[in-house]
Image 1: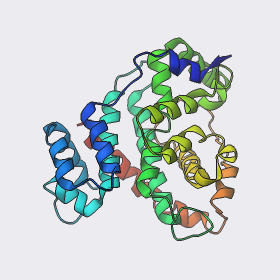
Image 2 (image 1 turned 30 degrees about the vertical axis):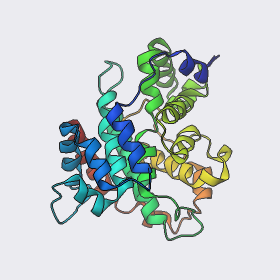
Image 3 (image 1 turned 60 degrees about the vertical axis):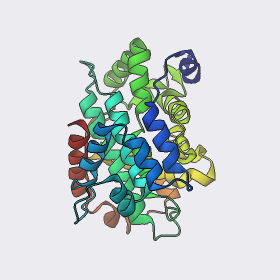
Length: 292
């Protein structure tokens, strides 16, 4: 059986973020950074500025006042939200081709759905001390959700034959991508996504959520709630058939470990899932904006 970690090490030209993005992300992570510092960097990429402002002013954030500058966006939304927008705008553009057997468009529809629902779950559960979501920033959930399947893109582009073998196994067996890839790769796309997130210097929370998204019970306790949120968001998107990410099991099983970690009960689940349709609409609008 092949090893996902070895595959990543063998990829000499592992996808990297543009220099302006990596510099910008470092500044947005640094509490000592000023708005002027960020403006000086982002001003070098007018196309990125335009895309960020387009996203900030979209229905996704529903800000009543029109935002006309990056400074204003940071003041209203904060550094972390602007960072999640930067990550979204840059990464979707990096992996946006097509495979006739695997729709990248449907992949990103699903990924944006998982991102949006992850953010939504965190906001809904943030006041419940048992869930552990109070300490998680909603945009950490958004970025984790957006990148939950990014390892599949690496497999398709750098190990295409193996990727197609996994897809065919999933389709023939009517199982999930994760279940099919366990017969081909040790660690699978989650391990690849983890290494990619690490290479991009994303937060440890994001890295670990991607790594353990299909094995919540094995996740280190300090990031288990975030990982559980991601697992639940993936399930809800698959249940509603929002986009497609290479899964062929028609009746996905609820992620019991995630439900347990988040202390979700039969009484709280209806409240949690109320409003999902509106969130899916937001996700669709966000993707349209990113790709335009």
